[in-house]
Length: 359
Image (cartoon, rainbow, N blue to C red; front, side, top):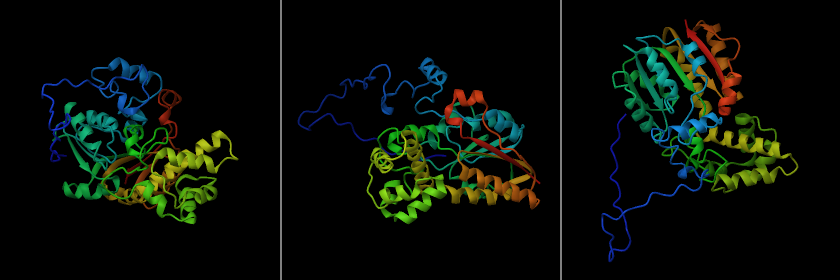
């Protein structure tokens, strides 16, 4: 994927009457203490090549380094997909490229992987990362599209069907950890949540437009929120510019609940809004309908989900495909991360893996 670079703004050093010389030294922002809390200050974690010991310590503590993403259930995904040299594969959610890297290593020589991602901020970074790892255009191509566009991507490439399809439906750590994206309640940022900031409306705008009854339905359907009616009355039609403002309002509406209960409701409200803002369920259903025609005979698909709404849809689609003869085999029991992985990477805890084989 290529993009036309935008011209960099000219540096400003003050008033035109007293310009600073071009050779003026600019100090790098200081690292605020041994354990900085602001995302932008964690420059060591953004440069893993120079600070490998820092990255290793962060990962050993069970955390994900800032600006990175740890692929989940890699061994289980590879077992489900069984990649082999010469295979044609599609990663519908490229993200940081962790799963794609392992798939590429197994389908080469002779194989090729198409990587899809809707995020215009992270996609170029991941493409550059995979190029630096030695995967050229003959082995890997990047496409800016969400997973609902898989069929169109394959058609544009002149491909009838691929051998492997993978989709990780979780939000990447890079998106969660960057406050400016507005996905997380743990740091203040604009209440946005768009995977593609250039399209659609942010979560703040959606909340302003919703009536209480509409929001209650959304909270129930998107996150199984037990206090949907109470929260809908408190949040619908309100103007929350930041993630922290919304968090305070959620907690304030549930004063009779325990602290743990309020915390879970905050998580569920953010999840429900993110799903709605990005129309995630509709995109998933489009992908599930198109999977059989995107897979070659004997092709395999594996999908990682992270909450019940996603898992129900994947399970039902695979079961229906098996009944209709579209799939020859599916996994009957959901696959979960091992205890060791959940301990090493707590973000993997809610993950569920399902797979199917094209008849």
